[in-house]
Each structure stands twice: as C-alpha cells, then as structure tokens.
Image 1 (cartoon, rainbow, N blue to C red):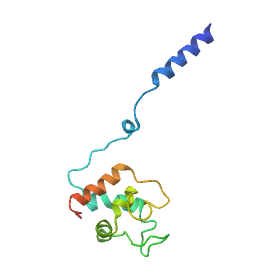
Image 2: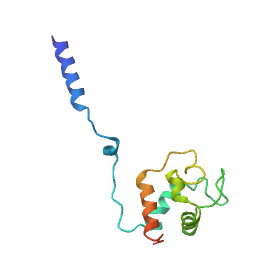
Image 3: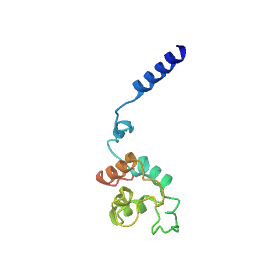
Amino acid sequence: MKRIFITSCLSLMMLISCTNASEDDLIDAQPLPAIVTYNAHIKKIIDTNCIGCHKNPPINGATIPLLTYQNVKSAVQNNSLISKINGDGPGSQMPLGGQKLPQHSIDLITKWESDGLLEN
C-alpha cells in the first residue's frame, strides 16, 4: 500500500511539473540597450567568438582580421558579417564549425548597424 501511494505521488508530481511552454518561452530575452556601440557591446562578442580565426594574419580560412573597430565596421559594411552570423549570407555560417551565436548577440550586432556603427 505504501509503495502504491509513493508511486502515485511521484507520478502526479511528474505530471504536474510538465509544461507546454514553447522553446521561445524558455529563451532568456534580454532587452537591447537604447544605443549599441562597438566598445560597450560589440567588441566583447567579437573577441569571444571571432578572434580565434580572425586575428592578424587570419587563420583557418578566415579572410579578414576583426581586431579593431575599423575591421569590424568594414566587415559589416563590405563583407556581409551580419548575414554570415545569421547563416543566410554568402559562404559558411560564422563562427565556422561552431555553434550559431546567441540570438541576443546577433540582435546587438544588427542594432549596432542600424544605430550607425558607433564606436563609443
């Protein structure tokens, strides 16, 4: 009897803990800042995810360095950087061989472009 009671309680707890939340509900949606700048927001993303290959000189098939504000600004304007990190641009999705950047990071870079590619 005790065993049946415990099994029933565990089953009920498992059933109650289930949810119909979608994957989108589980994503920690962070608000974007009013203005996105390279030094405050973008440099950290690039340094963490891109510098491994996009150094000077670039390695592992990378074609351009992304070490400076000017490098990254030029990559957005002339080398389809945002399309490549979204996975819908020419060439391979960046970072090459790695996981797609978190959507919040992509949104920051996209907003940086729409805000005018500000440095500070």
